Image (cartoon, rainbow, N blue to C red; front, side, top):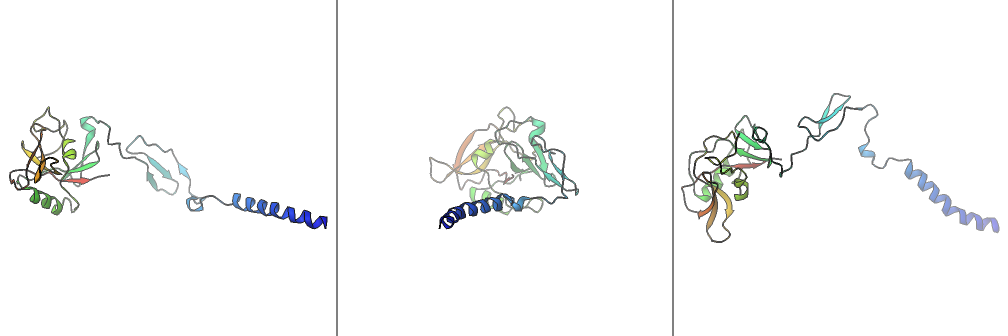
Length: 202
């Protein structure tokens, strides 16, 4: 009788021991386990555009991180031509801009439709920028009010539509003056203003 009682007390302990051995003998995340024949060569670094991990099978995994939106870059580092040089990547914001805006002017609805229909290097998805996004391009010490080292063409010393409805007046929309950098508002039906399209980058 005493042996039966001792065995009953030992059974839970043995069961727990078996479970522990079983769990610790298995990898915690088997889906992330690399093949034994794949070996990492080199180091991982996040401080370079060309950083990455090289594998023994010849493949490469980039580890270059998108730059933080808050950084301030020198003129020669900020802008990069993309899409066969028809668009401009702004590395400070991660936004991609139409490089050569048209000389044509639009009302606000027409400006939005133009961006929606725009194809650059066979790529769609363009839109009218917000007033905040437009202001990221402004450097008031220049005319047009664009930063040093920018590769844009056809920029007019005039107002450019934003997608931002004016917070104070109904039917009005915010614009940015590319001469002074000043933010103003105009009626949606005004046909005198220009468009530069933007595309979300990162």
